[in-house]
Each structure stands twice: as structure tokens, then as C-alpha cells.
Image (tube, rainbow, N blue to C red; front, side, top):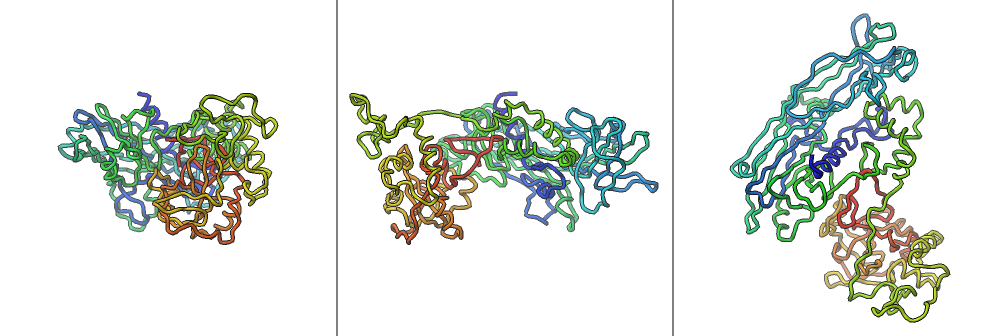
Length: 615
């Protein structure tokens, strides 16, 4: 497997299991009772929800005359797991059954359905595989009788212990692959069938005496999907080809009264495509070259988000994801394993999982074999690996400076600091005075942060007597956020101005998209250490704007991401911006438009094109 494909699979696996089970990983938790939220393609006859039966991916190829594309469709197939208690009158479903065990349970019986491609089944109840308690299962569909307990409490599976079986829904990975020459796709549409006939298996649950106490019935229902692909040339001199792939669930459905849970059994879950090209190259749709931008803007993607994956700079693999990503996403190397919440903070999930009580762990282990492995991973993680979850520095570099702009802290400009000389000929003769004992360029950000923590909330640091130095450090040379202005489309925008937000002019994230077109009030004009301007704003329609203003919790946009609605307005009697966290401090200015200054980021998935984090 090539390096780009290995990276693509790591990211695709994170997408595949995103939200599969969430902390505290118990079937009884409210957040785990409504599952399967991403990439769901329901049967075409099911219309009880707003979910759709198909997805469409369109992307651009260059140098594709002799190219070949390989399409990998991957998704989860829901498998029900029903626990049945044995009785004189046969078996009846129960939500939970706990029985004494004399060791590993009897092997399951039944047949497995075929599938054109790979099928992965990560552990079954009673398999006795490493990381699984023998006979662990999970969950409780509605309508079952009360919990049934045959003996004792859940244990290791050794003689004299007990094992709990839960009725729940599991999932099986499905993957199918098909290859088409681009020349053939230019001649017309090609289609590939994906058929899963379904299967049913039965596992007997026995007690220490060998008498059957019940059984676990697992079942996949049949699925039928179609992958359709075609290509067309894009008009113009650049010899581009637009590839269109449609994934459609065509499973028959004729039950108008069915619930979503019933429809999910015949749905494709977390469906996504990995598309690989040989003899050609993809064009980024998020950051296309200018010559390809008009063609990129005509691509239509429905319920998918295609991004380049693999090693940065390589353009031979594309992931069409049901989750918004940036080009070249990757999983963090510090992450020890999948915790099914790829944008959450691994350290937090790790520590919270360690706090689960023995009873909570028993319930979680019984929910799903994957959760049992997760708990084992957390419990056995060495301290040196756990420490890595605290954070990491990806890149260290010196910001490029415009030769025409004054250097921050130069002796020739406001906010001069003694260690930064403005003369290209070198530093002035003799040592320069140090305004703060022990202050050096390396220690300045830390000292500034310490000072910021001592400020009274709501008190602007630039308003304190003698705080010119700290004002320059926090907000740029000679800046005054309360009075500074910036020209936008020929209009001076300053504190009090009203603007309309237009974040789409840059690569907006999901949060920014919800803010597009909203009107806002400018609360401050900030200058960072590189001389770039940022507008701190509050939304006009936000009922908590006054509260945000008093605490300095703003949204941040670049000047070219707003449209002026009027000239600078009065301060309306409001206090200064009062940013208690000094948002202009190095490392505290928001990385992307629309990001609040208190956002956290996870270590389980990362993506930093141009220094921006993945949503």
C-alpha cells in the first residue's frame, strides 16, 4: 500500500467510526441512543426523515487522457444483536441477560453473506479474542421485557464469574472496489452493483453446567447499492476533466410506517469514497489554482466533501467525506487509538474514561467489543504516552516580514523594545536599557500572559497608565483598538461600525458558513505582530452581545471578509473592548475568521493548511 493510501485509510477510518459510540460508551447513555449521524444513505422509499438515498461527488482531473480511476466505496452495515432467554416455551427477547460462565462460550452457528470486496467483523460476542470479555455484547432496543439476571455480576469469563449480554446494534465494515479508465467514462456512464444478501447467526449462551441459558441472534438485512461514474471535459484551454460519482442506495422499501431504526438496517452508514488516480492528478476544490477556480466552482457535491489526502503536495488520492475536512487531513501521531470522537481532545477523553466506575466499565464493556478494547487501551496506556496527549508543537518558524512595513518593536516606530533594532546596519553601540528587569524576547509572551491574568476583567490593558509597552506587545505597534480604523471598500471601519459578514471569500469553516450574511458591530480593530489587521465583532442579533462585550469574547474576521453597512458609529456608551485574555498576544489571536478566542482543539485529528485547524 502506498504512503498516500495509508494516510487516506487512517483518515477514512476515523470518518467511518466518527460518533460510533461516545463517552461514557454505555448503551444506556442518551447520546448513544440516537446513533449513525454521518453519511447515512437510506432506502429510496423511506421518507420519514430528511435523510437521502444518494450522494454525489464531483471533482477535477488534469492530464487525464490516459488516466485510470479506482473507486473504493466504504461504509458500515448495521447488524442487530438480540439477546434471547431460554424458557420452557422457547426463546424470548430480553434487553439484558447475565449468566454464570465456565469459560469461553460456544462458537456461533449460522452462515455469513457474501460481499464483493472486504468484510471486517471486529469481534463477536463470546469470541474470547484479545481485549474482549467472553460473551460481551451490548444495548437494549425498546419494547423488550425488563432486565433478566441469571447469576451474579459481570466478570472475566473464568469459572465462577458471570458475563452480561446486551441487546444492541453493532456494525460491520464493508468495502468494495471498482476501476474505470477515464477514456471509458468520457464515452458514457459506467455502473457497478454492490449487493449484500444478508445473513443470520446464532450463538448459544450456556451456564457452567452446560445447560443452554439463552442465545444471541445477530442479523444483517440485505442491501443493494449502485456506484455510477462518468466524466466530461471542461471547456477551456486547460484540458481538465470533471469526474462525477454517484453512490445510491437502491434497496427496495415498501413500509411507510417504519421507524428510522428499521430503515437504518437497510442503509449505508458513514458512506464515503476513496478515489485514486493513476496517470493523472486531482485539482483541489478548496484551494484551486486561479486558472482552475472557475471550473472548481462549477463542481456540485451533494452530501459529500471531497478533499485531497496523503502526503502534502501529492494529488493522486481524494477522499469524498460526509464530514467537512481540509486538504491533506491526518490523524495525530500522539493519538493511541480510535475513541470514536476524532475532533474531541484525546487527553480529556482518556482522563474521563479513567474515572469510570467498575459498574460503568462493566456496562461499557457489555455494549460493544470495540469499547472493551478501548477501555483496555486507556487502562494500559504507559505514562510517557499519556503525557504526549497533553499537546504538541507541529511547526516552529519565523514569521515573514514585509520589508516596507516597520518591524514590530523597532526603535524607529511606536512600541519600541530595546532588543529589536530598526537599523539594517546592526544594533546601536552599547547595551540598550531593559524596561523590565529580566525581560527578553523569549520571555516577553510569558510575562505578558502573566500580566494579562492579573488584569481586572473588562479593563482594557491599553487604558492603564504607563501601559504603552504592553499595549504594543498585545495589539501591535502604536495601536489603539478603541480608535483605530481600517479602510474596507473605501469606507473607514472602526469601533462602532456595522458590517455584514462575508467569510466565504476565504476558505470558511462550518462555523463561518452559519455566520455568512449576518450583520455585526465592530468592537475593535486589532493589529497583530505581523502588521495584519483583524476586526473583533459581535452579532447584532445575538442576545448575549453585551455579555460577550464585557468579557471580550468576540468573533474575528479579516477586513476583506466584511462589507461595510455604514460609517464608524458612536461607542454607544459601552466600555472599552476589555479583552482580559489580550487577544493580540502571540498564540492567542484567532487562527481563522469567525473563531472565538477560547476554542480548544483535539489531538485525535488534525489539519493545518496555512496554519488553520480543521473544524
